[in-house]
Length: 115
Length: 117
Image (cartoon, rainbow over all chains, first blue to last red; front, side):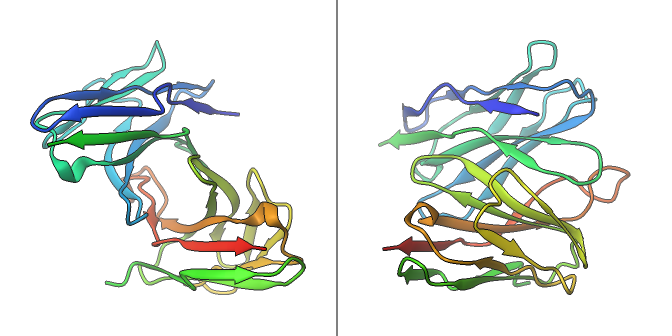
């Protein structure tokens, strides 16, 4: 079974600064996807960024980028130029590439962006 | 596009009552999921379905049942509600990942907050 660990329950950052959220995972699989989801106070889960394990290049989406270290089983999220609207819970998630299957979530990191 | 629609958004149940949380998606997605999220916690999978007529248990299936008679609908049934089932429930869907047919991304509903007293 896969496990996903987010070691930072809460973080804060000043508006316009950069913050990095940590995520580690444990799996024996070689082909998989990793995701970061954002959950603002409205509760809706929104995909922020995804990474396919077979791709060495780190994924980027505008102000969001990841540092994917496959050997270390680490998948951190960097948010640049933080905005007030980035305040939310952030969940790291793992999914095997085969048909099915479950998305396994970490426990989440609550990010507060301060003005 | 409506995406994934969940009803009701809020519900209070008494211990021992039963109810069904409805979930519908209009994206023709094969895979559908039910998750629960306890306060301050991540999401845990209750049940999932890879297509009409096929369902399977997730991590925390006890006390719940599902059915998938159509591609669009995936209702979650709570029998004999217990306080431990107080939670926010999320339905999600996706198309199969890989092979250029999908990204693995889950599309979530807005959640249903259930309180059992």
